Image (cartoon, rainbow, N blue to C red; front, side, top):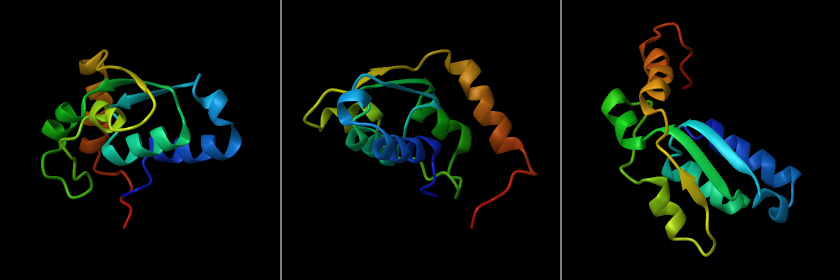
Length: 114
């Protein structure tokens, strides 16, 4: 449940690059980073986030799915609580980005982590 791509990327980036460098980097994601991922992005020092599908839209898509207990906490709110700016652009091309999630959640063969 905590191995989201954005969190894993932020962790790896923070171990590989300086904050001065990461401040000039952009993380692109098909969906808005959740509260956990947003915290990891902030702590890693990544300076910009661009995403497709909003967290609200993702929650509508997945509903009360046990594998995606979505919080109604936009990444902008998480970042605004910090002491440095993280620029956010999104949602962009939300319908197209939502198709990626729809295909994932509809796929009965996808591996489920326990």
